[in-house]
Image (cartoon, rainbow, N blue to C red; front, side, top):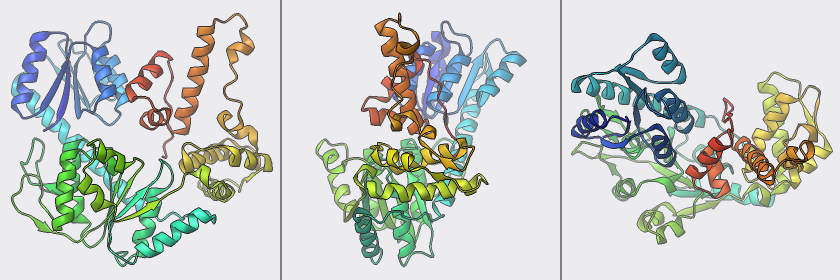
Length: 458
C-alpha cells in the first residue's frame, strides 16, 4: 500500500482516479488545486504525486517544481488531455517520472502506478545500499578532551558484549561514527554492519527494509525481499533516528528484540536471527514515552547501555583538532596543497556555538578549502554567522528610506539562508533548529523567494 496525493480541479476525474487507487489498496489524499497540494506536501509524506497539467493559479509543471523542492525523492506523474512534445520534455526536465494522456482507462493507470512505485522502491533500496557501503568506511573519533575520552572508554567497554546500545546526542555530533567504532571493536567485526535511517522512509517501506517481504505482500512487491535484520545476521544493525519509528513498527521491532526472530511482511513463517542492535536518536525518548509517542517497553529494550555524545560547544578544546582533520581531508580530496587556518580563524571557530555540531564544522572547513586561493584560510573565508557579521542589514546600509517591513524581511531572509547553508540545504534540520514546523519554514522560503542550495556531498 502506498500513500498517493491526487491533484485535479475536475471533480469527476479526481474522484474516479481516487476510487481506482483505493480499490488497489492505496491510501489516497485528494486536492483540488496546486496550492493546497503543495501545503499537504510540506506537512506530510507521500509515496507518489499524480497531478493534472492544466490547472488555474498553479499549473502542474509549477506544482512539479515545488514538489521536487519539498520532496525530492517522491516520484511525480503528470496527467493531461493536451499532450505536446514540449510539455513532455519540460516535465522530464523538471523531474517527472512519467506522463499519461487523458482519457485513460483503469488498467493503464494501475500499471503506471505499480511501475512507478516499484521504480521508486528500487531507487530507495539502491540509495540505502550505497549508505551501507559508506558506513563501511571507518572515520576516526577526533578529539582528546575529557568528554571524548569518556566516549572512547564507553566504546571499549560495550564492544566486549552483545548488549543493545542507544547513542544519544544532537544532530551532527557523530553518532554513526560511534556506532561504527563499536562494531569494529567487537567480535562481530568480520560480519556486516548495515544501517537504516528510520526518518527517511515511509512506514511501509521502512517495514519492508527492516523485516523484508514476500512476493505479492503488497502492491509493487514483485519479488521476495530479505530485510536488513536478516541480512545483518551475526553482525550489527544501526538504526539511525530511531525516535522517528512509527508506533506499529515499534511493536514489531520489540517482538524481534524479545524473540530474536523476524517475520517478513506477508509471511506466516519466522526466521531466527542473531543481530546486535545499535540505535541513535537526537530526541529525548524518555520524554517521548510519557507523551505516548514512543513505547516505554521498547525504550527500555534499546536503552540497555547508553552513550551520550556531547555537543561541540561543550568540548571546544577539540575544535582545533577537528578543524585540522577536516582541512587535511578536503585538501587531499580536492587535490590542493594543504591549507592552514590562521590564528584569528581558529579563535572564531572556537568562540562559535555550533548548533549543527561537528557536521556544521565539517561543512564550514570544506567551504573554506574550496574557496581559498592561497595557502591559508582566514576569517574572511568563514561564513558571516560565525564571524558575527551576517545580520547587518544591507537595506539599512544602502537604502536609508526602506520601510521597517522591508528591513525586517531582509534580515529574516538572511537568517534563513545562513541556517540552510549550515544545514546543507536540509529543510527538516533547519526547521528543527529554528524550533518551528517544517510547513512554516517552507512557507517562509516561498514567500521570501529563497533558493535552496545543497552540496553534492552530505
